[in-house]
Image (cartoon, rainbow, N blue to C red; front, side, top):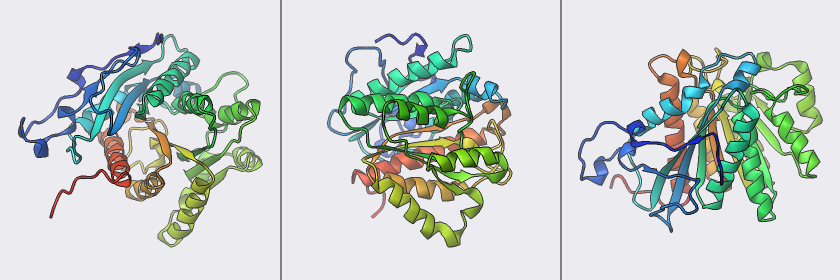
Length: 341
């Protein structure tokens, strides 16, 4: 396989505090991470019977530029890795985390970067990893989706639902070129061309961040969406029921998270800040609900923009969300360690 825009990772990106080099109970993520090169015919995988997770970075924010957003998200993967590196390891040796490196955007050719990500995701899934794509602009969703779709088509299984946590519907027209605001329009058209169902749910949508035309388009395509203002405690049970109903219709779920979903007080380093954004704890609880279904096939988190961050708080938030998701997967699979008596 040829990936022209691909760079393997290196251990210099995975450093941090070491409390004890010999005590697994003292380990942090940088002490257990394993690096792989997905262009090689066979990966050197130690954990053939356990649960394998694989990071792939998407170092591109050309879609953000085209969408007139604040550029800087192409540095997101590096900073998310740095914050994730120091988090504690809370699982045993039957769980392994790998880093496959980065896909970059060359000469502003976002479409080629998306295609390269598509190939990378398909390879990662073919090797029985859970992909975690770290971005990068949210344009990564188009390449990510296509990689999942290719993998499922090869096994004659196209029952895929998309759950997007986002302030934006990202269903703008793309007559000229795609951007970080067009992915789900592109996916809808791709599904139509392949005679496949387009099944999309968007949670945390801001009314002030989407035009009437976008809501009309979403309605015309029977998109399920929940407004950010409706995420109040009195509505949690209803939202949970809506979420379960959507999940039950599919064999597989792709979860994508745009960091502009969160309140700007906790996530200032994003392409489009949200002063009325959502509480991360609330969001993570709903993500964990999805993961507990054991249907999640792949996940990503996009638009962490270190250029505009303060004290790396947005990168740290993304790292902790990923950490929470990983532990939810492990719990759902019954592979968690007992930390206390």
